[in-house]
Amino acid sequence: MDKVVGILGGGQLGRMLAQAASLLNIDVVILDVGENAPAKQAVSPRSANLAHVDGSFTDPAKIRELAAKVDVMTVEIEHVEAGVLQEVANAIPLGVHPNPSTIRIIQDKFIQKQHLAAHGAPVSTFVEVESTFASVAAAAEKLGLPLMLKSRTLAYDGRGNYVVRDLAQAQKAIDALGGRPLYAEKWVPFVKEIAVMVVRSATGEVASYPVVETVHRDNICHLVFAPLRTRAVNIAARARGIAEAAVSSFEGAGVFGVEMFLMEDGSVFVNEIAPRPHNSGHYTIEACETSQYENHLRAILSLPLGSTALKVPSAAMLNLLGASSDMSEIRTIATHALTIPGASVHLYAKSECRKGRKMGHITITASSDAERSARIRPLLEHIPSPSA
Ligand code: ATP
Ligand code: MG
Ligand code: MG
Image (cartoon, rainbow, N blue to C red; front, side, top):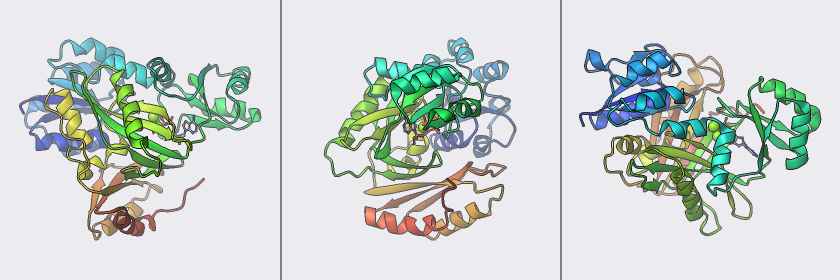
């Protein structure tokens, strides 16, 4: 396609973007620390000018170095320097996607929630909180207990969250969140967590993928089931509508992951939005007409978007999380998966395994939910019980 895409971040999302890019003969240049980042291992530069950049995706000099090489720049992580992206955007032929202004809003979860509320998205009540007991107490007065105390910035895998069940825990919660700016959310007693990937073209057209159920363990995504099954009517259409409207309120092209809570009465709240490919959309590689990664590339390069429809009746995705520094359990599960029809193994080539670290995933496709359950069951038997 004769275009060069620059990606800030070289983790598994960048790796799967690079894999999708290679199918379309799109060159990819990665900015991240080290030569062995998962995404860098997936593509070798075809010329010196396209060599990957070694440095932090938060380093302004390195971002400028990447900008000079590419036709369009995108991110696999929202914790980047939005100010520098804004500065380099005009010098890049197709700019930065999604817009740096979008990344700036989303990377501060409190500002993101304000933005979503202002654009009519259903969100749980939330308030700004200072890192003091009195401020948490005032939030509890307004929101009730338990409440979810959240770090506004740099959060992932629930690491910026603390459930305050009792005000006696307030100081411990503030200390645990390490002096970062905070806000509080009213507790949402959801029955399921669901997610929708939405792709937004450069001209602002949006299309959504099917609604999926996400199952979390210890705050980390453990399983994804596609499509969502519920007895209640219209939930999927409504959730997709809410997700599309929320993404329409942001500027710039690309895919967005919309995490939502489904309530007993069938209502839906938006939890948070990721301005990039998302864990809940890995299944699209094998289960949809066009993967989230390919559609992200098509969107940022102003190419025609691909169909978001499922091409199999049923799919599931199992994250392979490190149990310790030892990778042997992951290898055992991955090897077992190779014997299961419809199972596709993705290993991310991370040099170190750690407890809770995303090391790979397995997608299962099947002709029915029953077949999907039968195919995934032997893999789940290998997964240790949750620690909590
Ligand atoms: P991610 O890895 O998805 O970026 P994160 O660190 O940004 O996660 P959140 O998505 O805000 O964290 O929250 C993590 C999990 O905590 C949610 O998936 C949900 O299970 C739970 N959670 C978050 N907010 C609330 C809430 N207000 N009420 C109840 N549970 C919540
Ligand atoms: Mg998050
Ligand atoms: Mg989340």
